[in-house]
Image (cartoon, rainbow, N blue to C red; front, side, top):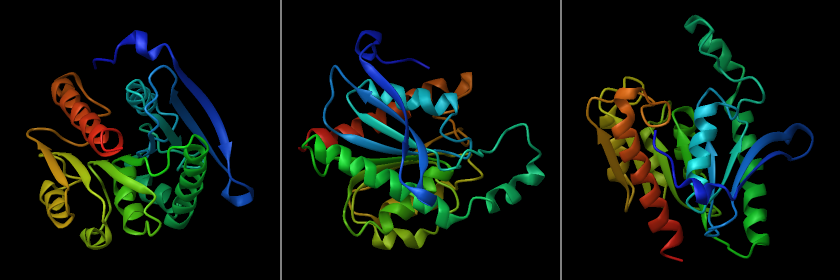
Length: 242
């Protein structure tokens, strides 16, 4: 994958953090633009491979190179899924990460990010980003965001969500998926986008699951297009409108 200008990226800081207290304590990874910080912050909800995954951290780094502060919480609580494990164990692994605990981790990270941005004097400039498992959680977070903390979101090939969540989402979102993704039917993604005012769905022909952040060599061109679409969306909704 192509990368942002390396000179810009020389002034991006990377921090390992622990936030929250007691049972709500979680680890997180923060990538912060230093040279060209635009004051906006994005909460990135990962796929099942967790916040230590190299592809996910590289994606967060690339986004930060364009001026954003990107926080990646550990939704898997130190026990991510591994490609080395038999698929037959997957549902048991998922059961070990109940939705209530994941929601708490997201809430802890969101509160921390809100306070961080408030300290910097740039309120209401929060975006939400998610891949796969995290993409589905993006929709659920927005559906219950009564405080209107997030101004917009980008959800890549969301999984395990109900279309009904669209009924209570009031901010524009960009949904990105592959036409040949068995885990995220493109028709479902397009239906959600139609129900939310100002939202869009980008469907990439001949692409499967995770093509944008875990791309094969064949996926590279569309992965770059998807990254550019996400970047343009966040700039329009978080930066240029402020």
